[in-house]
Length: 54
Image 1 (cartoon, rainbow, N blue to C red):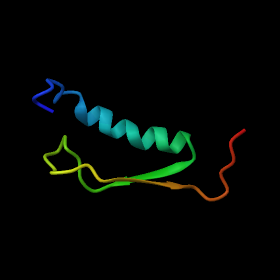
Image 2 (tube, helix red, strand yellow):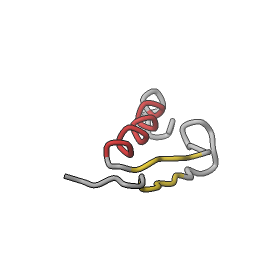
Image 3 (spheres, rainbow, N blue to C red):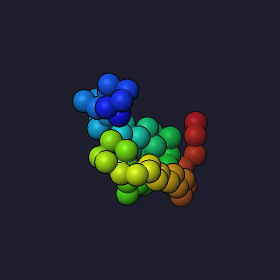
Image 4 (cartoon, rainbow, N blue to C red):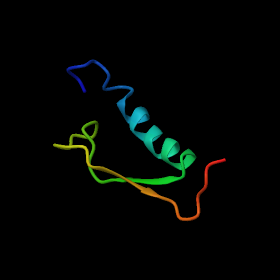
C-alpha cells in the first residue's frame, strides 16, 4: 500500500468491507489484510439466512 501512496487510508477502506456486506445481506470475514502487513488478503462473504432484497 505504501507503493501506491495510500497507506494512510487503507485501514478505513478495509473496514468499509464489513459495512457494505451488511447492507447487502452478507456477513464478511477475513483474517489477513495487505494493509496490516499480511502476505495475502483472504476475505469471505456468507449470505445471511432469510435475507431478501426488496
